[in-house]
Every structure is written in structure tokens, then in C-alpha cells.
Length: 206
Picture (cartoon, rainbow, N blue to C red):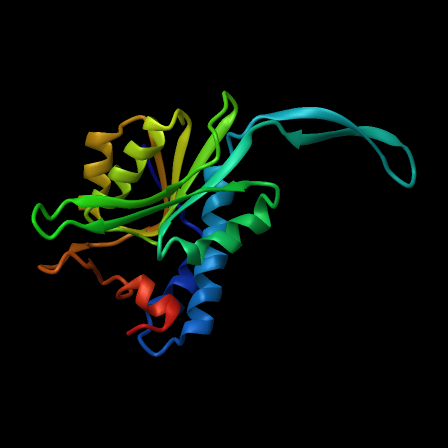
């Protein structure tokens, strides 16, 4: 399933990201802020358990998250979203998946994977600023499923209709949350109007 977050703060921050004049510092800040806003919606279905808490005035009922949240940035651009989501769930574990395009097959090839052990209560939150063709994201979801994760959600800043369709076809059980669904991909497979190469803009490697 696919969800586009219709929120005025996301729209305003996306405008800053799209601006080619926005520098790495402000770009990183806005990516983290959008990640946090979109993740709030993506994690709405987390399970809670009751706890007792003593306030300065009385003893009352409270709650804590029962699930083990595992944030999985897709290297390298996904790193730009990590801190924003950790502000929301600071006790989350973090795993990493690195993919690169195979020059012979043009398919994503895994070059790095380090994940916490999946448990019955694990929720894997895959983060990557751009859902373009969907190839890297689908491959990452494959990796997570092979490693025992069954509850997987995706958080992106932007998405394309092509990427949306690809994930719906390959992983219909995975929910995808994005800040905006853009018009489509150009001949070079970049999202249009998009915001350019997110990794390069995050880390100043233009």
C-alpha cells in the first residue's frame, strides 16, 4: 500500500529541498525533518503496552512501544534520514544495507549488509530519500525478508509513479510512506521535478 503525506510543513520543506540554491547544511536539516514527519505517520500502527508512571501529582497509566523498531537506511543517501527518525524513536536499533548497480546486468547488487536479529516484534523501517525506479528498494526488502523481517514499512521523501508500481508488484505486503508523489522519471531515471541526486546534495559531492 502507498501513502502520500499531505501536510503543509512537508510541502514547505520540500520546496526548500527542490531549490538548487539550497546548500548541504539546510538540505540535510530539511531531509531529517521530513523524515521525522513522514515516519510519524508510518509508525502509527506500532503496538503499545501499559505501564505505570508516577507524576509529581499522582500515579497514572502510561504507555510504551512494545515493538522493536529497526531503522534501515539504504546507503548512502538513507543516512540523511536516520537522525530525524531516531529523534522520534531514540531506542530504535539500526541496520544498514548497501547496494550498487551491477554494470553488466544493470540490477542492484548488495555490497554491504549489517542487520540486528529479527524478532517476532520487529518492525523494519527502510529509509531512502528517493523512490525512483524501485530497484534498490525492492532489493533491500528482499534482503530484509531473507533475514527474517516480516513487518516492513518504507519512508521516503519523494517517490515516482514508476517506483510506486514496482514496489506494489514485487512487495504488495509492504507499506510505503512518502512526502510527495512526483510526476515521473526522466530518461536518466531521475525523479522529475525532483530535487536532483539526494546523496550528492546531502554530502556535498556534486
